[in-house]
Amino acid sequence: MESQIIYLSKINHKQDKLQIENKLSQIIGVNHVSVDIEKAQVFIEFETPASLNNLEKDLYDLGFDILY
Image (cartoon, rainbow, N blue to C red; front, side):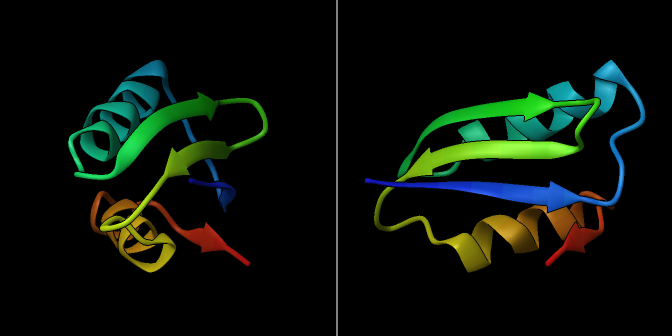
């Protein structure tokens, strides 16, 4: 299992947090998702077949900008 923190440019509302958690939790291989609104961070634990690249793409598709 792999753990990653994905940094976003901003998370505006609790609704954004719920949207992120719901979307990423539905992906096969994702075990845990936690969102910190104030720090604009997404902590995620996942394993194959999920990948960091796919998770970042899903966040981008939701309208969030990824910071590297």
